[in-house]
Image (tube, rainbow over all chains, first blue to last red):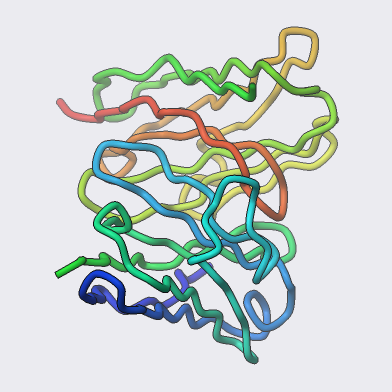
Length: 109
Length: 116
């Protein structure tokens, strides 16, 4: 039940793109197409941004996209905006439990 | 609209117990699995437990096995987390969330502080 590995931080200027990685194992990220990404602003609850690797819930801008290759999933935020500055967490179903990533703080320069 | 409202948090001494509740509305509660997830102040998210829609299956993170119990009352649209033998490291904001493979809606959380 180890946490998924994410880089602690990522940054980009407005309009640029940033990609966050999420590395697990064949027992979680690599074994299921149930990777989700959550955005969390300070003092707020996490918000679902991507589910089942690459699907966007209604209302989430198409600037947010997800992908997966082997045991590593990725979230890309294109056309960065000031309101995208937040913490981002990946999550994967792992059979009988769910795992979260270590979290990445995205800064908009 | 989907609403999840946690309650029951507070300050408790090590070794004591606390029960959290999560009142659900805006969806058919009896058809969804539910989770508890916690977040230590300033730190990341940690999955705690999940319960199937009918309560038939329950799974826990190793660090709470034997101390925490997840349950639900489908007649009251309410999820619970009974926390016994609390430790300082259980201090966190506890969120309830809807779903099984994907946690699509979250409550605002309730703070549990374990301190003497």
